[in-house]
Length: 206
Image (cartoon, rainbow, N blue to C red; front, side, top):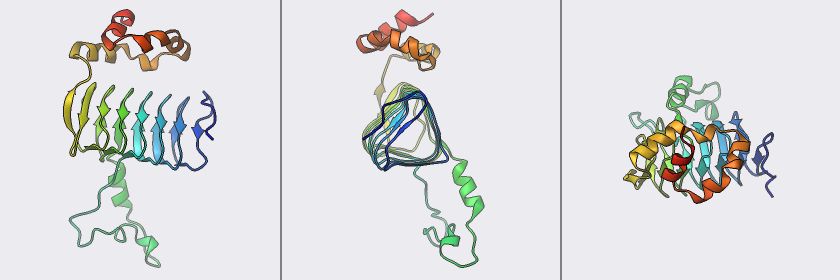
């Protein structure tokens, strides 16, 4: 059973594996998910059976089950695709792993903006940036950057439609409500529940 969400302690299921990560406030990581070298922003959550590696994830990000961030590629130009060539230390006595290969992989970090929804079973490939407020449809394979406040889906992922009109999307970027303090979020809770994006922006934009 998951622990209660907390400002001070992330709720990590006992079957999840989290290594070399930085976790924000009110974060939740569900069953059997694996996170390595991930920065996970405040209020973001990861559902069951996800695999996230070498990624920076913003605040209020909604990650459905079986999502993979930074699904790394095998070296197709080599004589063999197999990782015995770059994980040689696992196979040969006295051999070392290929440090430059892993450094090149880490250089292609995935970046997810704030208030993003990543649907069930989606995959985000190395080096991709997903903008604030974007939606990635279930089962999508994202190989290129996703603009803020757009909805993409398919294999490979393509634009389905804008989530908001451009003026609203740009206003949301300026408003940056995801940086509000906890008590201000609570005070605006009913408006988050009942107002459209445009109406919310009209009420709260300076």
